[in-house]
Image 1: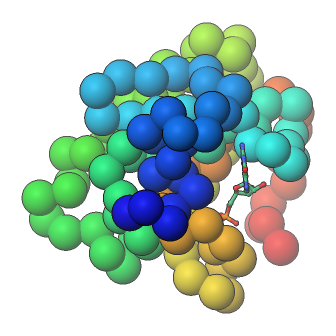
Image 2: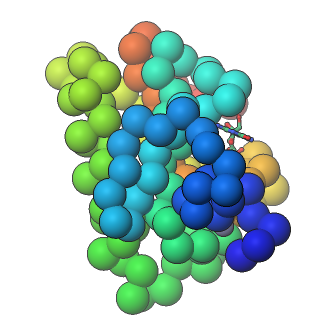
Image 3: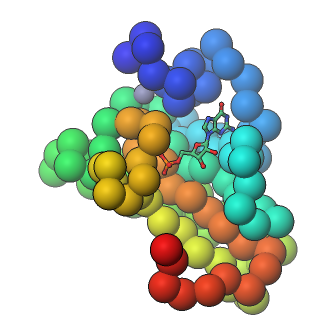
Length: 114
Ligand code: 5GP
Ligand code: ZN
C-alpha cells in the first residue's frame, strides 16, 4: 500500500523509533504516548483492520503477540503487567487502517477503557 503510513514505516521510507523488528513484524514508539511505554506493533504486511484478517494471516497475527511479550520483557514490566489492545473501526477509534497492537505499560492501567 503506497499511501499507508505504517507501510511506509515497514518499508523504511519513514523511520519511526523502532524497539523491535523481525522478518514479519515491526514495533515502534507511539508518537502520542498514553503510558510511560506505548509501543505500536505492526505486521510488515498491510492488513487494514481486524475485519480484514484472513485465515492465512493467523500465524502472522500471533507473531504480534509474541513481539508484545518480548518487548514487555525488554521494557522491564513483564512481571508487573501491561495491556495489549487493537482498535477496530470507527467506534473503537481506529485512525490508522493498518492493524497494530498498542502495547501500554509502565503505570497502573484502569479498566474499563473509555
Ligand atoms: P489507532 O487510533 O488507529 O488505534 O492508533 C493509531 C496510533 O498511531 C495512535 O496512538 C497515534 O498516536 C499513532 N500515530 C499516528 N501517527 C503516527 C506517526 O506518525 N508516528 C507514530 N510513531 N505513531 C503515530
Ligand atoms: Zn499498510
